[in-house]
Length: 297
Image (tube, rainbow, N blue to C red; front, side, top):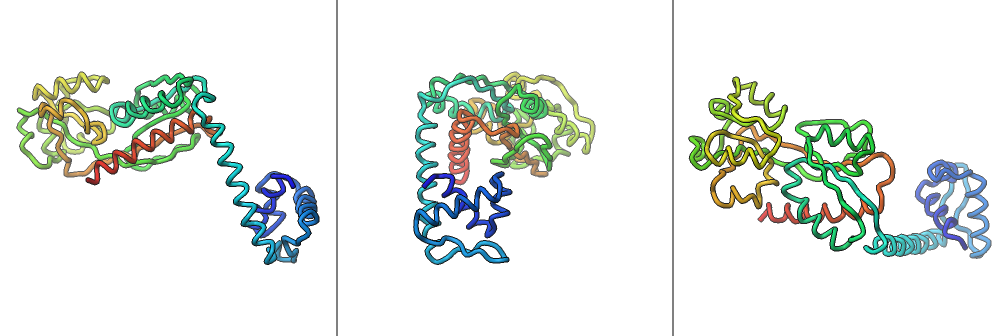
């Protein structure tokens, strides 16, 4: 009995057809037929009844498939145990992330990941979503963590949405907007702003001409300006949970009436994700789930 025989009979049982199973497994139909016949002879039992409509499980065949699936699950678990042993995973992994993720989920993820997988060298590059997407496409980045407003199609990558973030207007404690429970883009555009992205500039221009007083790609520099009450800027809610300016009351996050959202994705190339990549994403999504639990309290 060979593991590939078990794999074949499971796929035929799921597909109900040797032809379809052979196509899915990229194996010739005669090979699968021979493997099934050999297994039936070895077990002394008929697993499938062959009909014009396809391959139907016999009563004993259904029981055999159930045990075969249990065996294959155990094999997968065994492989994962060996593969995910921290000391065996090594190499360099380069990850691109937007600012809002760099200051929220990423720090704790990096800390936990490094303690479990000390032989993996992590390189983090902060950037905008467009340049991160391009970096993954070109193979310069192994993983991308991006935020996209509205609908978007990633044509050359695997993209997995893991969350929807809210965009909040952040003002200094002395700002005339600080006392409001909610602000509209119409309110915001009347005051000086720091437009943190092209998308937000376009949104604001629907309501007037923004008075941009500060241009910076460095979010921490922008926060100094906001705290002084000089301008309004926009940040993802996820990035503000542990922000020291928010905790000390120097910056006030305010919901926006138009309720702008950003869909958050993790990206990788169409090639199979590396073992280190799979391990990193597992730890990352644990941090995301913890944040969601905190948010719901």
